[in-house]
Image (cartoon, rainbow, N blue to C red; front, side, top):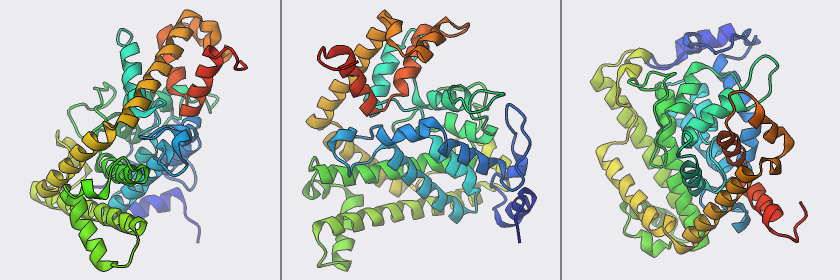
Length: 387
């Protein structure tokens, strides 16, 4: 038996929850295209994201640790894969459309510049008088304009729902600005909302993992964090002979499971209490419905405070962030002073109608990996480095 797009749509109608986003209900694409014979629109979005240049560059973009600090630390790519996996699990448990959640998760960090949030901060400062820089907005620019893969339009021409999920992505580190192309007073579909929480679950837990591996934080220090300590004690009781590394992973597994379970239960309870019957009911709420229970939210805030004070403010992280800011500032100033330092295919954009020099330079730097930015800095400022 072979599946067609129509049979997938029929399967969605039977299998998905009433409040799930169905592929037949998509608002479509900016540039009309023929439908694929056996892939839904959201499956095509997912595939286009995976195959784009910006997705591949996530391999050498920073989470907390710069790529050269070790092969075992997370990068934007491994983080993105973890977010997609957690999002699919939550979507499946809730009877949602996994394809939308996966597509939004895979695209949510495409717009991150090199060197993590310090890179975003300095680019926003440099662009203060030229529209600023915010990585959600830049992710949308990538999928709408900057990727060049099709003859008749720029960008990836994703569906409205996936683009909205990218534009409205919000978490502890992500505060999107208003995007007039979308309903600013309405929530994104629930499939996109769960990606926001999956993002937090993923980075909190892998930052514990990477923080312990780097010895910037310790198990003793984590005793003050209830979410860690409760699950650590459970892991020790179930695995009394396990070594430190196994206990660490068993604890993190338990934390992720506890948070995902709490999120699923809380969303189902909220949907029932609000009397939501369909996807429209999800979207009509100004406040997103995806959230932890008050108790889990309290524990999660405690964990985030611990990581902020003990990992993100660690002197090694601060030193690398300071170095990253200087690298990006110097690159930006050099390109601004002498645009011919840019590759010809980039510098030529400055002369085109509607292209502003600062934004062209910003786009170029934002697309760099950590490795490329470090190499480019050496080429421009080290007299002994080959250009």
